[in-house]
Each structure stands twice: as C-alpha cells, then as structure tokens.
Image (cartoon, rainbow, N blue to C red; front, side, top):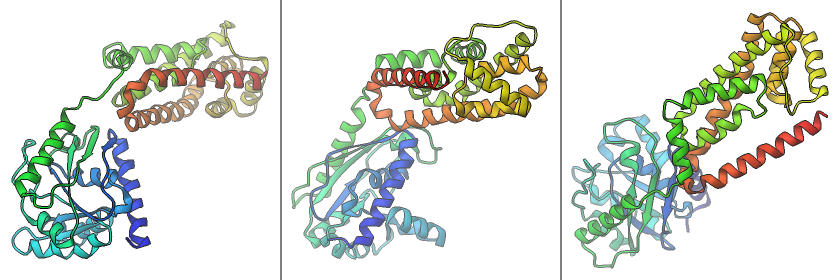
Length: 390
C-alpha cells in the first residue's frame, strides 16, 4: 500500500491537472485501472499526455510517469517540474533504460501505477510507433499486469511544436494484457483504444449549435451590444443573462461578446442620462420607488462614483443612468465611473461563464437543460431582488 504522503501528493497532482484541463476543454475517462500495482502503456503524441493521465487515473494508484532523462532531467528546473508536478522518474533512452525501469519494481509491488510511453518519444502526425520491451520486462519482474490506455485529443490541445488551444481530452483504460503479451500486441491494444476513443463523436445539443452559429456570425456582436444598450434604457433583462447563454455555448467568443455588451451598456447609460436630464422618463419595468430613492441618495452623496455599488446591490443599471441625468451628473464623469463599474462586472461574468463552458464541454448535450436552469435561476433571483427593494 502506498504511503499516505505519496497518496496525498497524487491527489494534489490529480486536482491540479484536472483543473488545468477543465479550463482548456475538459478531460473524460472511460474504464478504470485494476486494483493493485500495474504498468500503464499509452500512446504519446503531446506533452499534454502526461497531464491527461495524471488527471484521469485514480490517485490511489499514485501514478508515476517515466520521463526521458535526456530531456526532463538535464537541468535543475526541468527536473523539479517533472518530479513535483508529474511524479516523473528518469528513463535513459541511450542505454541503461531497462535498469531505470526495474528500479520501480518495488513501488509497483506497493500498489503504484507506473506510466510508460513505450514509443520512447512523441509520435508525429498521430502515427503510433513501435513499442520497446521495457514495460513488459518491468511488469514481469514486479509480477503486475500491463494495462493499455488510449489517449485522444492531446494532439489538438498541444500539438508537437505547436501552441496550446482548446480541446476535449479523452482517456480510455483497457483490460489488462495477457502475461505473455508481446510489444506488438501491446501496441495493437493501445492503437485500438486510441482509434476508438478518437473516433467517438462528441455528443452535442442542436440548440447549442444554433446558438453558436448566431454568436459566431456577423450578428453576434450587434446582438450583445443591442441587448445591453436596451437594458440600460428600459429592457428588464440584464446582459449577463445573454452572456450566461452564449459564453457557455461558445467559450471562445466570451471576450468579444463581453466587450460588445459593455459597449452597449455604456452607450445606453449615456443616452439614459441625456434623456433624463432633458426630462424624458422611459418605462422602467421591474424597478421600484425604493430603488430610485436609494439611487438619488447615493448620487447626492457620491456623485457619479455611486454607480460603483450597482454591480452588487441588485438595482438595475438603467435606474442609475436615469438618476444621474436627473441629478445633473456630468456626462464625462458618468461615463468614466460607469465604465469601471460595468466593465468589472460584465467582463468577469463573461469570462466566468466561458470557463464554466470549457469545464462542462463534454456535457454539451445538456445545453437545453442548462438554459432552462439559467432562465429559471434568473427569474427567481430577479423576483427576490424586486421583492427585497419593494
């Protein structure tokens, strides 16, 4: 059984890499490792493969990753990164590698999972290279099974010599290989798992795809601007509701849609101020006299900076815009103060929903249910706010 310290470190590493991969598209696992120690053999096309395995495999196995000694252990900082963040141990590729592997036999007998990439290097263009015998020799020496694992999506997430981009990563754990399996049989098992995992389509929602098509078209930015512009004047549905729908559907569009909503809010708020200063009163549904009284009091005490309370007190932005116009707040002061207040809230909400969309990417088929929950939660929250200010 693994020492408590090793298991705790494995839990921390799994949490770290699960969190990182959740923000870059998500990680999904099929199958489980057998009880006790085992040698895991997997395909290798990206440096992200290590993160994927550490995030997907059970921490109770305390996965240790065999890493190229001539790359990860040639400098102190790489060695520290590899050992602490990946539980890596050095494996020489130019002679002596078998001895390096056999040094892990004792930890295998304690119940640890030793993860190896038997190709010895990252593959090019998704092609699976020949497997070396080291993994099979180690498993035989320790008396533990060899478990094939297929990894898909890491070649898109972090291509060899490429840059990081969003992609769902899938890890499929197969059945242990027979004791007398050859390197070719191990390679064939991993290749079959990898091919099956990569070919499995991501289940999606037709509604999400329709929303995404609008957001990514020429209509997306004007939609965010007009929604927020209208809300700053009279429309009762705040732009954060729109961002909650579209940023989860298309996380990559969050900066554009958030900035569009912010621009619409500022333009609408400036127009609301000008209209109110001219004596024009626009309809303000779902607002109360107590809200307006609170805004008048805050503006009298703080001037334009009173709008900084708006993101937190539940009073709609349009009440502040109209109140600022009636109080004679200078337009330049109002624009600067509302940009800071609305900007912090709108951008934070948009990016937060985008992060949630990335973390739940593998559950896109439930997007319709998510919209129903979002709308229902918004309705309940709005009702509570209006009741609280009544």
